[in-house]
Length: 112
Image (cartoon, rainbow, N blue to C red; front, side, top):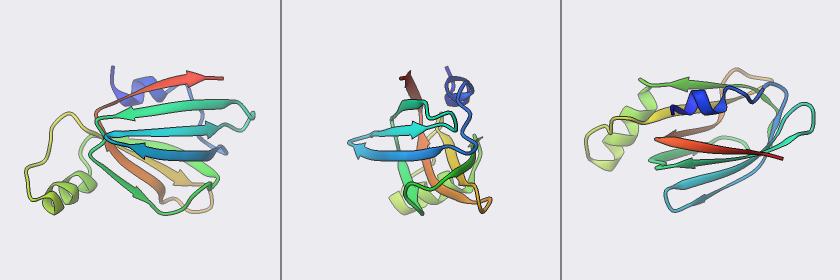
């Protein structure tokens, strides 16, 4: 199942990334939506992460299959772009730019 299909049930607008950590090739995130419901999201086969701000209120999330981030990541690693990765961008509420961005192959979600 594609990342955007797994995450479509979560409303990221007006929510907050409470915390995240990278463990090996996984990014584990705790997210609180606007209703104060907590979600644990675990991305696997993570190829790259860019973080611009921590615990910012979100305006939404975007999913891109063909993004310049993937190309820049491949260049910096000195290799070819991997196929099957999705770029996930969590955009800040005050500005329409990413506060957290990652390349991953899949994810799982647990609702609390």
